[in-house]
Image (tube, rainbow, N blue to C red):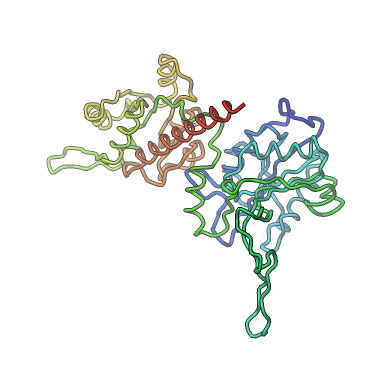
Length: 418
């Protein structure tokens, strides 16, 4: 993320910085901020949205942990290595933000984005930030509309009676007759440097809220929320600028993706490897949706080459031998098929795959891939190589494709109404 003014952004004379706080000592979920959620590290979701919004001169992650720093940098963020004084369990977010402001005097507007809000989209950021840049607000924070009746808490043994806070029980409204209440959803808090330094807060002076729809208001606080949040993210999360439905070709490295890395020896000394039927089904699912699958085998691996020949007969996939740097061979294929890399999905499992993982519109690695490959991939499978990872990635590709088609259909309906 560079320091040049983002193209076409209002307020180009002011330095706008995104700041994600990601302390390593989370008490609820260990290293929660980099735990995989729907194939992406938790902070990766908000960093992707921040970078793609093109509203920031710089995007930062504030952390005290080496692993979080590595992940942050791999997603294009700079790192504010916070001091021990603001890394304690008792330290507040505001104290860390104030330290950041002190160390970065060039920053005029600080956009504190919570790592625990994985359904944040670039348009949320853009619309909220324009309230400061175009409408002159000093602070903007995100809210969601809730329809919940609240009652006063009563401690046992006090003899007190509870009472309603926001309704008249005699005239209890129907949901459709009540507009509800606005509650902070914790996605973001934007404020000017002057507000933070002089008032010591992120909500003050000329303050405004930005309302987000409930489907985008996901806040992960406890581990039990993780499976629920994962399903919400798969449906409402932001997956990047590339339209997933354009994926027409998938490259799949056989070794480590379709196989589990083990070699079996028969009693007569024959070497054998196994392939999971779920993964073969995944390949066929893609083919049924007109996604061509091309299997990759290393020129230096005779066992994989032999397996690929059998897989080619079984699945109808073309097999291609690649060298130590697969990109050198595959870029010619992409050009010959008159595609761009955004039209390509790639599945690999090691350092040699990093360049292709970075380039492909959709990319994935099995759960047991090395860190260098995980950091380059856009999706990390729950399954390990040879045990359903290819099937899982195939389902992810098709989910994004169907999601994009639904969005295009909705856009056509919206456009036809004008």
